[in-house]
Image (cartoon, rainbow, N blue to C red):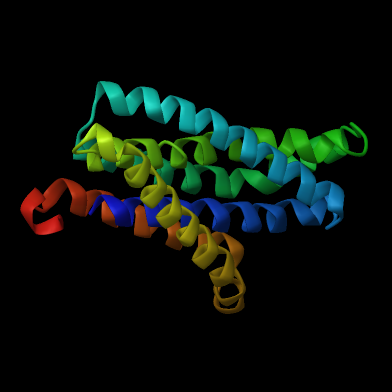
Length: 193
């Protein structure tokens, strides 16, 4: 189901963003500077991801494209999790100063996974588009579902970190994305729509 992919990508993005702050906190603290750095990097990556995702959606409007995108997002979450702390510590040790150190750390660690997860809504919109006359309602619906996923993801973070470590929480999110990607590839289209 395409809409569920949009929901899951929205949830994963916000979980990664909030837990990303937690991963940078031991090195840079939990100031507004760190939150601003992470939010700015995620917004920039999402803007790039929406742009590239739209390009991909027009050239490969297939459910397999959506599945591969979710799987790539899962792999990148798994890849960025163990490097977050060493990257932050290396940048902290370099004493780049105030604002730019957490921005650089967030950029290095989180740009790729957040950009790839942002590919999902444009691809989902293209897959759901049956009639150009309804493009506004289709895109509005997909972005609303993705945003609702982000809200649920945000609200789930306290629960996740109360029962497992930050890294395990991110691995669990990646696992959900990977399982859903596999379902998109394995289950016949008629059973998912």
